[in-house]
Image (cartoon, rainbow, N blue to C red; front, side, top):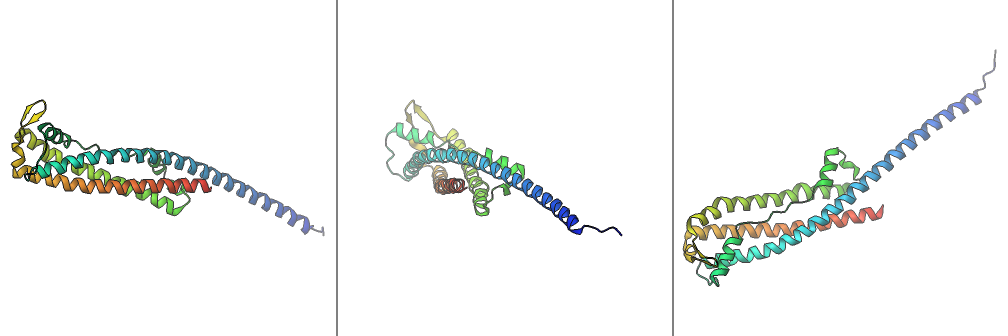
Length: 221
């Protein structure tokens, strides 16, 4: 009976197992390295988008201050307070007919979302904060913008077309200020706008916080 060199067989088997294990490890390492590279690219693009959003929100909040002042003056004028010159009244009357909306940069986020690989963002808490910003906060700005657009479209502009009379290039007949309808429209507009402005400020803080969180995460890698 031929003697079997079990030690040699076992050694060969171990070599095969080791080779397979190393191959699996290398494949896993390459896949993980690829995922981390993809994660970095997505997050770096997202930081660029968020910085653009922060600048846009800063600009919009400055515009909101002017719109808010116009709404305050018109609402006070509707209850008999002085409104200044005719040209100032006309400027404020025209100004509140348009609220520039916030249009966030969503390219990087939507691309990652469409890929079905949100879990590329390895930090679970960071991933949740990003999703919360885009799906809750940014959606909230769109809802406020839509609500104000509807108010202007359905109430302000139709009222102006029927009841506001411009008497010259820089003058306007202030009689419309005494209307109960205008008073209701302008006060409703004012308080809806206040809510929008406060929410925009919260969104700016959230956007800045998430951007800084992403930057800190990238620097730690």
